[in-house]
Image (cartoon, rainbow, N blue to C red; front, side, top):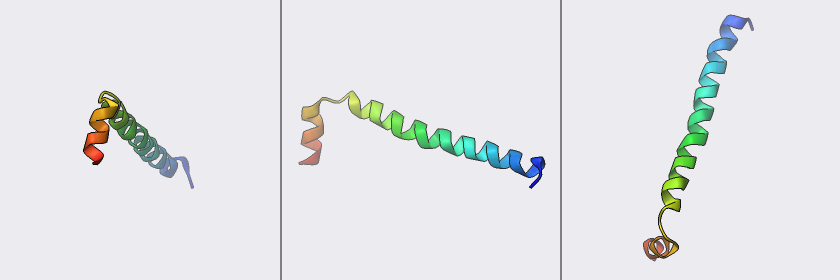
Length: 44
């Protein structure tokens, strides 16, 4: 493989890795704002 084929692969991999980290982190932060009682009510 040459550098011209590795560069797009590295760019795509870094973008997908950023999404894989950012989306769960954002969901966790949103969920963290709710109280434990509110979270338990949703599961019942």
